[in-house]
Amino acid sequence: MQKLIQQIRAQLENKEIEAIFIESPTNRRYLSGFTGTAGALFITKEQAYFITDFRYIEQAAEECPEFEIVKHEKGIISEATRLTELLSLKAVGFEEEYVTYQQYTQMKKQIHAELVPTSSIVEQVRLYKTPEEIAVLKEAAAIADRAFDHITTFIKPGMKETEVSNELEFFMRREGAVSSSFDIIVASGWRSALPHGVASSKIIEGGELVTLDYGAYYKGYCSDITRTIAVGEPTSELKKIYQTVLEAQLLAVEQIKPGMTGIEADQIARAHIEQAGYGKYFGHGLGHGLGMEVHEGPRLSPKGSQVLEPGMVVTVEPGIYVPKAGGTRIEDDIVITEEGNEVLTYAPKELVIVGE
Image (tube, rainbow, N blue to C red; front, side, top):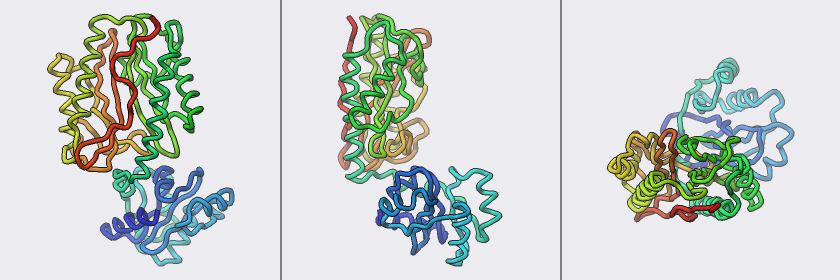
């Protein structure tokens, strides 16, 4: 944690800010290790404070050894005001993406220092995963892999999509996950053409493709995997869609490497899908960063100008979505390495047909 705090302090130095106020739950946990639900960080060039209420004093003292624990009596902003005055600070940064207008107004009234909006100071550090973080992400990915093996023995025609999503959730929790990483997508038949078709009461029928997009939230980190399976024999057109997506995904995984931009990574899969005649049916980017949140930087998309570097973890998830007919998405999690990338998810990708 100390190394991370020093990286934040280096950014404060660059921006000529004396302190930063951090209340984002994810950034708070990343920098401090705190797993509770209430508190804020107040980091200066020399001090690091964790502000919380009486409910979390003991927990914070145990989980946040790098921070001086401060109990607030009149609210977090009032305590930040006291620290600002105590340390005679002239410029205090805050996370513009997470502070509401109401909070800003309150800060403006109480804190007699320049309030400096900052963007992505912590997120920039979070882009690069440590070996310890990658180890946890691998465990989260392994839970998702085992869930796929399980669900292919469970799913049958006549089931509701929600029955399948619930079973995925229960299985991952039994395997050690705290929860799923996000609302599980189970999209069958015509609904498989909905990229974010969260499980519904629709009945899964024979001959349909079923897209399963889910992940395990484990030790504060997320996995994110998508597999599309068939329940009974699909049509030749659906098989062609599946094969096109599979080829595009395999090409991208094979070729993504450091030094490449998100735009270039996206183009690998997009060009293959366009050549097959399905370009207009691939409407989202190829992937996104993954870590403590299921959507982080960098982006793999036609707008993803950031260069990929070792330690970044991203998803690779091309898809084809043909309205009324159906669709396919296949997604893996990978970590960018010095030479190329390492795949974290290993569930089978060749078309699995169940319920025959």
